[in-house]
Length: 210
Image (cartoon, rainbow, N blue to C red):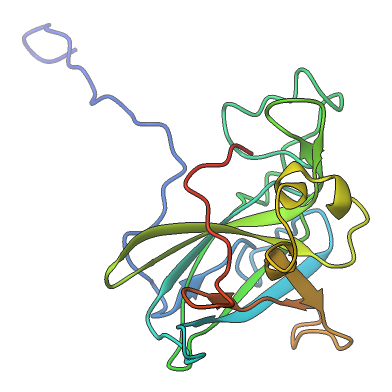
């Protein structure tokens, strides 16, 4: 109560999570907590690297790549994913939000440090979605491009409804290849280049429900 005995109302709160409007370190923020925070996400640490390429195979600098994914248990940190009707109660991971944003370097390169997501049921039908990252790409002259990154060592890939809807070689253009060597931080390393135009163009999607 105020001195006049009239109630004082606090402003309405908006549900998060909230992400910065700009890069705080000049290049990126990752899906994993910062080193030294004492938090460790469940699952296998992975690093997805690649380049954003034009139709001539040249790298494109200053592109923004956003990644969104399920956690290691196959659950998204999203109110629509309550897991009430499939796979029992897949837990949320308090140390993992599932979101990352990176900016490509002078050669078009990017690196996303995260954990390998779990498989989860598709929104419609009885099919299972294989582990994947949903990638959204922004840049000068590009409003929004959406594609996906799968993992070449996942046995669930052939049954994934999105991959099954594509013919080769388009299907293969969504599959990141595992490197025989570990990433610099010890994570399992995968690589996927994204081609914006041309004969080797990466498949992009107007809308695809998870």
